[in-house]
Length: 138
Image 1 (cartoon, rainbow, N blue to C red):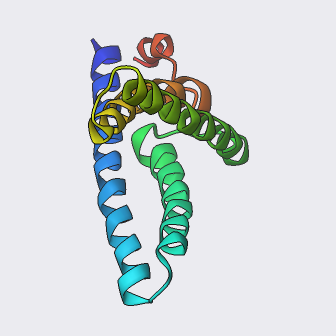
Image 2: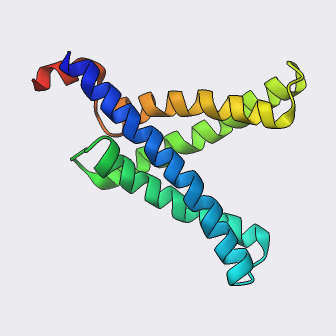
């Protein structure tokens, strides 16, 4: 039972961080573009870089509450996140081109699927919380 509770708690925190990240991303992009007058391309690029760092830190400290070597985790996070971005685009492309979904529906579907996978990849590969070890922590 503790295994399931921990998994649900982490999943809830992961979802919360995702919602915070989305909101912060919109706000920072608007601040950089509208407030500071940066070109949209730079505003979004800067925002994504900031969000990447924030998401790593929040995932490590808040979502998974991981210890260990932060540098190693950061490298694994970078690799995993980059691979998942490629997978998100591939899923979007397939849903858009072959399933003929509207582009926003295809993007949303790809992101939902990707975030579910990301949660388990980050949990198992990056921050070292395997589902089978959660029950051993009782």
